[in-house]
Length: 68
Image (cartoon, rainbow, N blue to C red; front, side, top):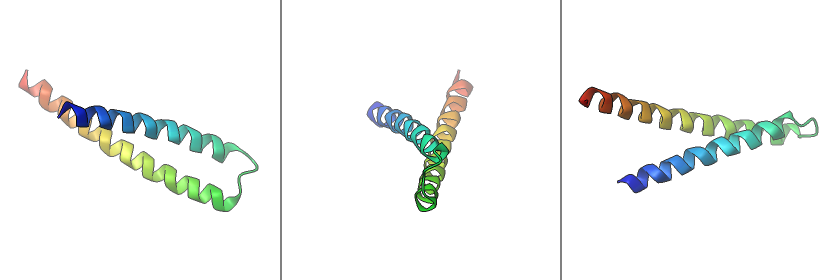
């Protein structure tokens, strides 16, 4: 079971890194509109995924805190 959590951590780290890349690309003035829309869509999906992962971690922390 700890392996799944480690994999999840890597995924969220990779997601944050990709979000930074997307932000940099969107800030460039030479990014075409179609590409910008695709990047924006990808960014929204990644942000939503990160939010869900972080909410899950928050629930686990609350459960562990209540057990103490």
